[in-house]
Image (tube, rainbow, N blue to C red; front, side):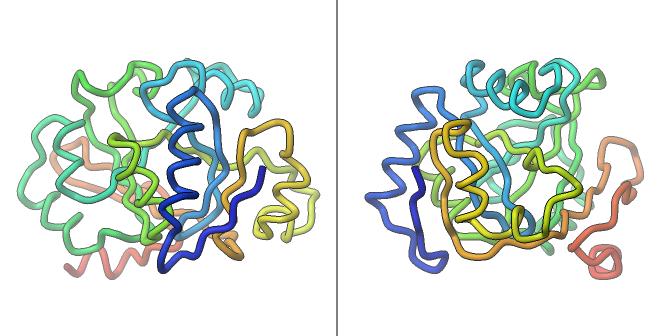
Length: 209
């Protein structure tokens, strides 16, 4: 199934269909402000296992992140955030950044790593945030299992993505052409935050705020 949504004004009817899939343990491919991602409800273990199997990895070893609808949601899933970190996130989110934070007990153990940290994103994409808002809780997100030998269009063109993953996922959400860039990752679990991967999000912008 492929569902086309307009990024500026996502269809509520189609969003309801997507949310129903997630609630039933299904998995979707969806647009962000960087690459297309693959996602499920963070509280559905069946969905987590399906994605791990699709990527050919053990779910216990996977490094999953999840998508929140806005910055006020983040505190519901993490240990207390320091004022400098909160200010930094407030200045750049929504945007192409992933913040590594210490998880609290509301985050399923399958998503936490051995240090009980999680990556949290609020993408600058109305479709992604509309799905999360309608679902009522975050979605687990990870990059697509793509072959490096494939043409770039196979990771950016939703119709070609659908051709490849039709039958492997429950729905592809067509939000227009995607990108090849990744998010910038900032580790905020130590006393001093630091960048561990520079992606689309500008580091200079982040550090100058």
